[in-house]
Image 1 (tube, rainbow, N blue to C red):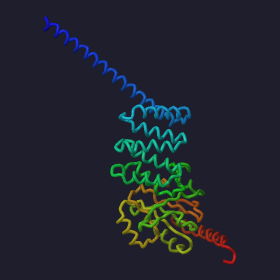
Image 2 (image 1 turned 90 degrees about the vertical axis):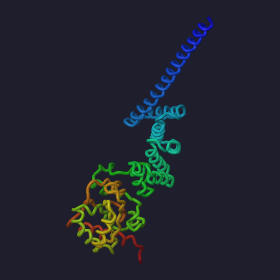
Image 3 (image 1 turned 30 degrees about the horizontal axis):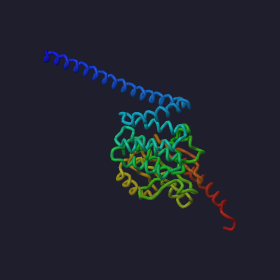
Image 4 (image 1 turned 180 degrees about the vertical axis):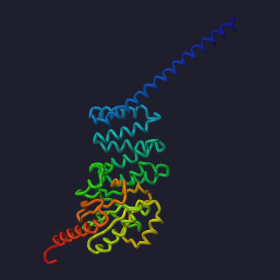
Amino acid sequence: MRSHNDFRHYSLLIVVGCLLATFCIFSVDASSIKTSYKYQEIKRLHKMVGQKSESAGLNMLIQKSRAFIAEHPKYKRIDQVYYIFGNALTKAGNAEEAVKAYQQLVENYPKATYFAPALLEMGLAYDRLGQHGKADAAYHQLVEHPKYGSHASAKTAKRLLALEKENRTGAIPTLAPYGGRPDALVGKKAIDFNVKDLDGNDLSLEKYRGNVILLDFWAVWCGPCIAEMPNVKQVYEKYKDNNFQIIGISLDNSRDTLMGYLEKEGIAWPQVFDGDGWDNQVAKIYGIRAIPQMYLIDGEGVVRKSDVRGHALEPAVAELVRENNTKLQGDKPAGK
């Protein structure tokens, strides 16, 4: 009799255990579904804000993202929520808190999908705050990262590092504001940069302020560029001692090929080379899509002509050099 009662007792315990386990599973599933729903809602709001930039939607996105991070710090896609949170704060004009959000992501989730984009955005946020030194640190960490150094975000960081700090406002500069056409830059301030030339010297447009500058985007592998080189060499030899400078931006991939050509042709003006071809940092800043491409820049840093080549190059340089020298003479104090 006891054996039969024991069997019934154990059976009852098993049934109760199964029911409890099932209840726990359902509870966990329900909680997981609820968390997933909140995550999807944040993604939906992020997309909506990106399309419409509504202030109400932006505030809601910030609130929901902040709450999600506090409630679900170990969620499998928490890095994306941090990234969205930082983006939303930036759009709301709160770059300081955005930096903190990106820092949390970068420090706590170094292997996460959004690590590299967060480093870039953190640098941009620092630039918005005028803290360019901290922005540089973020950009360098990304560019020099063993895993993410070739990531698209790292290439953008290289472009930003090439810019003069005063031109870094927290946005990625492109030609888009001018219509994306090379001639649309004519009459506007040339975009300055801060890079190293082939000899390791600092190079920028500002370095030659007061000189007429021919900014020449070219490559050894580019047939039309090589065909144009005799004209470029001619104007350099004629005006190099007359407040005129050429800066070459090489889109070559091989340093040896470039150096061999420069030595063979006796080309002495500064050259920018990083081995990235079309992804050259200065070329990306200027939105270069075809070469040869030249910009003629006056002594005050304004683009005066674009795509001036062939027989038109020397007269254009001569006119601008003459105008520039007249202005320089006029700027000298009397009696000097």
